[in-house]
Amino acid sequence: MPAFVDELRRRAEEAARNESAYRVESRDRLAALEQARIAAYRRIELVGALSRAVGAGEERTAAVDAGVTALCDMTGWASDNEAYEEVRSRLAVVADQAWLAAQPDEVMGDVVTAFSDFEAWYAERFKAPFTSLIAREAPSFSPVVDF
Image (tube, rainbow, N blue to C red; front, side, top):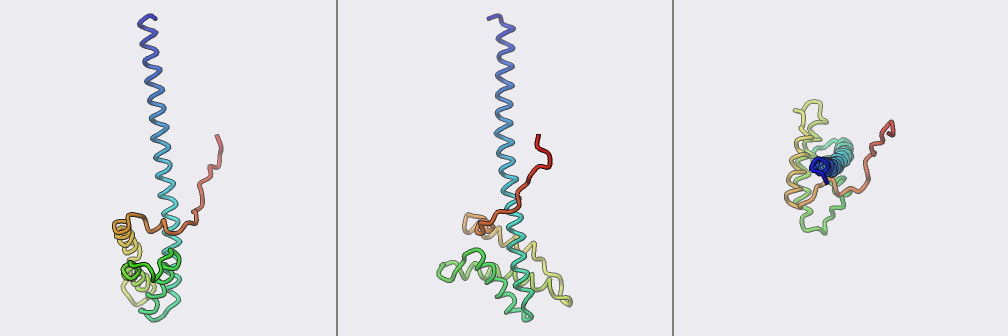
């Protein structure tokens, strides 16, 4: 083959490699975005349940305990697990912030930060995201226009 044909072949093969690499990169990025979306909706579900449970109680200690119990029930944490009390004590900080946030005369609780701190601790301690403990899927993204 003439050199110019070999050069065009080399360019075509490079273009094919670039396309393939982009497809892998975009597939991986889309998967990461999908997991972030699912975790975000699960986080809403968890913190919403905590908030409802805490909001149902008037007395602080009972309300915090109700919130912690609600999340433990949702995520499958039971007293027969050796780390149960450790998880409950960490969740109690989040529930207490939710209780504070619900009180008109109190300083606003920072539930989002407390839950983020809990999630970071949980991921470090158990090598898994806390949101992975609930299996319900979040709403999926459906394009309005299908190309």
